[in-house]
Image 1 (cartoon, rainbow, N blue to C red):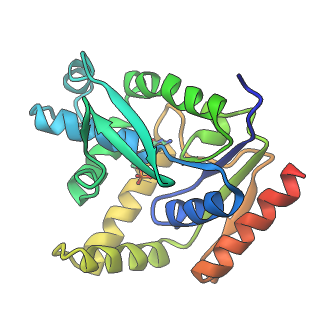
Image 2: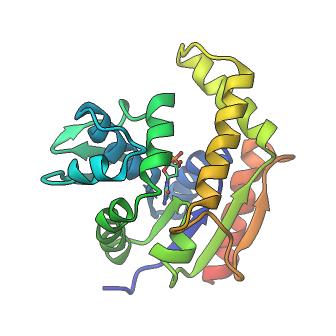
Image 3: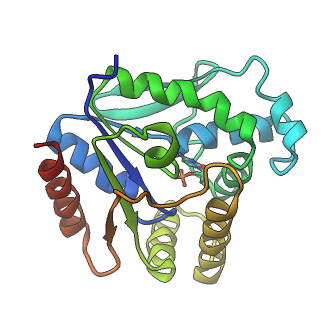
Length: 224
Ligand code: DC
């Protein structure tokens, strides 16, 4: 317990955290843990049960009997809602917004806390999220805060959604990005923020390869 190497990567949505953390984990032989998927799964479950994700009481009621688990197959993370693999179903704009709302509820954060700790205590891992360096893994060996300008993040997300055939406009995506930034960094509990020891990496002017390289270098230098 606790002897594993823990790397925390926090940052706003669309900074490229998951793609970059995934590639860096593969290069370093670490398990990659995307904690946003956990909040998304809680939101999916709440929405399926007819709860309004902004209504704390309604969301809390849906936690009763809920089981969220992570599995790793060929290095890829899968997330399970009561045994059902929902890894793809949680990637919609509706669930993004729902997860942002549900993640502001303290009971939801508490519900997911132990699962995140247990995974990090049993595997060398790179864990990405919003409060990993501040709350979940304050003992992380390396803390990275990965960010990029909102317009750049919206552009990247817009392209992803278009590729998936989701109908949307750039303006809509940008408004979503800004709204989620605001929600995530202004909530009372575990707001998105860098720690004093965080290494800040801004990917606005970096391409994917350069971003991955920057992260791998930062991790290697700090776990040496
Ligand atoms: O990283 P993501 O877009 O998949 O995250 C979905 C939402 O979950 C995001 O709006 C903020 C929330 N979240 C959080 O509050 N804490 C985390 N560790 C990860 C995600």
